[in-house]
Image (cartoon, rainbow, N blue to C red):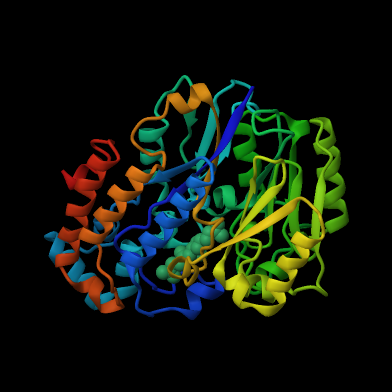
Length: 447
Ligand code: SUG
């Protein structure tokens, strides 16, 4: 069946800030307490969405989550009126206030794992929101993420939006950031690759030493079961623990795949040869001859990958059967990495073209082009079953950019989170956003 891959980017929320909440994520730690510009962050994201939509890449948008998460702060013992909750948290536990204000849902690669209807036994598109258990500020996302996915993908004949996996370390799940799909065409049956960092139960799986691995193999297996995937078309591969220790907190910081192509660094996986063998034979089952594009240590190191985010790129099919690689601008500012990009294009391999975007605001929190998007393969009938005004057009881009300019601050420092006016500003913004996106009731508190 013919189907297209839609990239649903997260609309950056009005409280985008740098709180240094993600140990193991080099950029997040380095920029802790830097001053952010939420307005610029949102506009940078919207401009990428429109530029890709204009090139014919199907593009959607997913809304930000309501912040601050006052329910979280109340659950942690901060009581009283909304302003009092914020004031006391700011005084006593500013890190918790920052978590409650985090705009981290913008990285929709972590919103869920998605399996297209061509892969699932019941013929529906399946979504499992990621529990993001590893970090407090991210672990608060999944219930609201499930709510917004159910708003957009609410047609239960076409879509199944599961609840997140159970809380607890055994099922740490980071969603599509650790998931890649291979197929002859987006609408054909595919192979789904799940990359994990550790195992809760299998002591033979060596865990990283410095940073905690966020994804367990047990979580990956549970998602594959929930989605009704065929065993022969699922491959589980362990991430290289040394790469996690070097700052590769998600597999999409070291590898990206699309259709028959996998662009990856030789240090991405714990056992490269075995991983590539298993992947290639599973791909053969669905008629895909895997085209690995391997970047060797000699070309660039894992540190270069973390610094530039070369692999956190979008690998997109062009009309002519070759591929476009969408990279963050930082790749062109890094001499070695920029050379690798030029070599990739000159090699005559699957990547025909590289396009770079200024996503600096998101990049400073460790989020490149691939983090900002959730890939959802949809048939025409499934696309017609979407709810809301969520597919990117010049008009939607104009309305959202105008909304951002009217509601967002251009400066947010750590101390600004204590400003009680921010609560009302965000509420007013979100109340209007649900109208623009034609998703009434999306934010119950926003009225
Ligand atoms: O989970 N950064 C995010 C970045 C997520 C990137 N996503 C993918 N690789 N798919 C994270 O570490 C930083 C927030 C802060 O420090 O304020 C943050 O959450």
